[in-house]
Image (cartoon, rainbow, N blue to C red; front, side, top):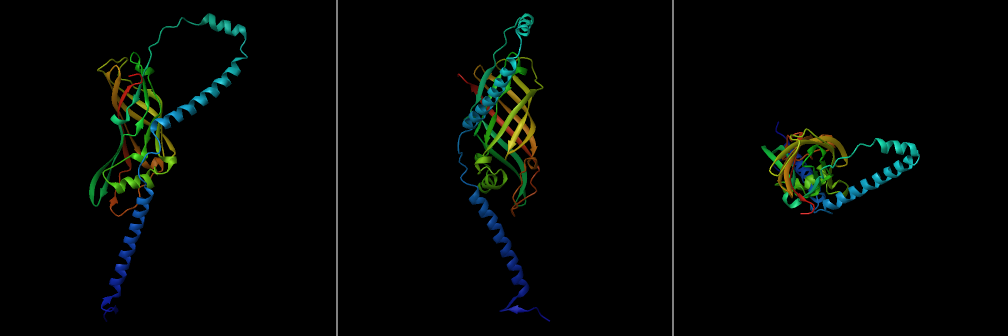
Length: 278
C-alpha cells in the first residue's frame, strides 16, 4: 500500500523538510547570538592603563606590608641594631638594570590552533598589537633581570574570519565583557639563562614562569623566551608557550561548519621594547 500523501507530497518528505528547517533555524539562532553579543571589538581602555592600575594595587599592598614590618622592627633593641651595623660587610656597587617598555605598534600577541572548517583542515591565527609591559634587563647579570606584568587586550584579537572574531569575543574568551577583556601574565621567576652577561648584538634565551589569567582563571605557565639586544636603547624578541584551552574553562561553540578543534593552543608574544628614556 502506498504512503499517505498531502497534495502529492509524501508525509515522510514533509517530516524531513521540517527537521532540516528546524536545524537551520537553530543554527541561525546560534549564529545570530554570536554576531550580536560579539560586539565591535573596540578596546574600552589601553593596556597601559590596566598595567598602571595593577602596579598601583601592588604598591598599596607593598606599603601595607612595609608598615607592618616597621611596627615589628620598632621592638628591636639598640644592641641588636649595633650588632647588625658592626657585622655588615662592605657593599659593592651593583649594576643598574635598564628598563624597556613594549611598543604595541611594533609588537603582537597571538594564538594558533587548528580546526576543520567546512571539512578543510585549517590553521587559525588570532593576533592583536594591544599588548604592553616592562622588561628590566641587567646586562652585566641577566639573572637579576625582572619582567613586569604583561597585559593583552583579548577583545581586539582578530583572525581572518569576522564570525570567528565575534565568537571569540562573545562565547570563547568572553572578551566583550569588561571583566574578561584583558589577558594578564604576571611573571614569578626567570630561569635557565644562556649567558652570564650580554652586550649589544647578543641573543639571550631563558624561561619565564608566571601566572596567566584568562577569563578570570589563573594557571601557572612557562614561556620560552629569546631576547636580542638590538642597541643601547632597544631590545626585541619572542616568548612562546602551549596551553590547553580547557584549563581556562574555555569551550568552542557548536556550529555546523567547525569541527575537530585542537585541544592545545600555541601562545606567542613577539615584541619590540625601547628604553624608557629614549
